[in-house]
Image 1 (spheres, rainbow, N blue to C red):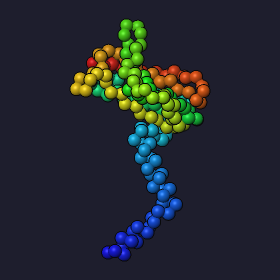
Image 2 (image 1 turned 90 degrees about the vertical axis):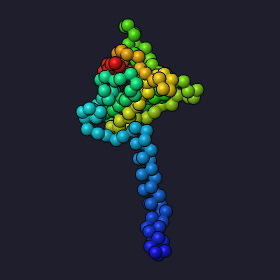
Image 3 (image 1 turned 30 degrees about the horizontal axis):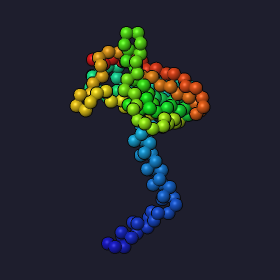
Image 4 (image 1 turned 60 degrees about the horizontal axis):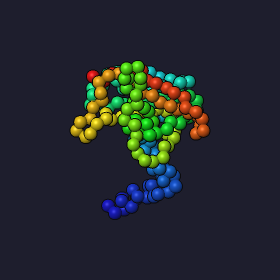
Length: 169
């Protein structure tokens, strides 16, 4: 039995190629946890060649539901989006009040804003919790949209993008 355990350990033996394989696997798991995925086909939540798209998971949410939105980069190069937006994500949830769009649940962290890369052909899903206190989280009833400002380089200006409108009932 001892020989089997030694042999099994020796199969990997922490060789450089084994370490690289383990590192790659851990890196993929990390990116998956962040919501960044590789290219996918077009369609709902997919990547559309030549476009950056912003799609919510639903057209109607309950007041206590988390809003989920997917950014899909169909461009041939990566893009950057600033965090510190709604719920400290890279998107802004906007509420329609009369004729004015008002940002909701902006980030209150006292840290530097970071530019988050989204590779060509990749998607990034963001989850925005409803505003309020624990046990009483709720979006106000009404019409919403999600906004994204993205750029192609750190010193570039933002290109605005908006999701389709959705409702909270």
